[in-house]
Length: 280
Ligand code: GLN
Image (tube, protein in one colour):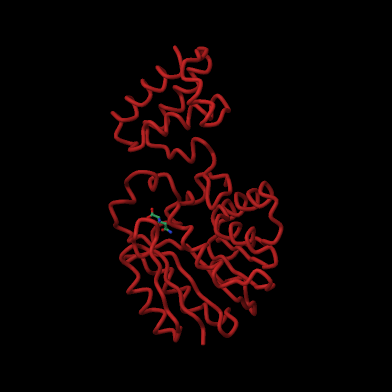
């Protein structure tokens, strides 16, 4: 069979599975992965025949996708902020929405400063490494309570050749006594524990500890806000990614903890996604 025909069959099978809403693109990505070719090559070689070994390998990946496994886990990586991140079931899969948080943080860090930045719950390291890459003078500390996640983020730092991030095992601020930062960022778990989305799509394959946070999804954000002031320099910023319907609650929590200059930013889908405030 040629590439065109193989892709056509895979696309139909993915569509029928209801686990994919971008079946054509996903079939292409998986075949590019098996053939180790880029998108342009695949498109311009639609009439090439593929051998049966390649066909079998591709079919096996399509079956994994049909069973619901995230495309990022099958490929083993996901692009975020122009960088390629290794992804495993031990971390959240980086999402485009989270680039809003990176941009918000970069806006508060002057390139010439040797700012101290903290990323709480770094997971794959996507946020910390994207910031560190764009602000080589900054010192970034990235913490996670999961050793397995830290192994992934450390591998990503190495592969991306980024050296200004230090990774620490820490349950939020637990190992950061007496450390103070100019900017603290976090994409903590923020989904309501009974939210039906946790049983759908990619979320089924991601660590629940990185997704859900109590009845209203705000348990971890509440905890971080309570402890953050003691770890911020005067005029330092605390910034969160949060759920599309949590901006008001997060702002109120920041007000209660005496933060000033509170703002909410929207993600690419025009949903409220990031809220931040400044320590007086
Ligand atoms: N943005 C993710 C989602 O809703 C959740 C990430 C998180 O809880 N930090 O799919």
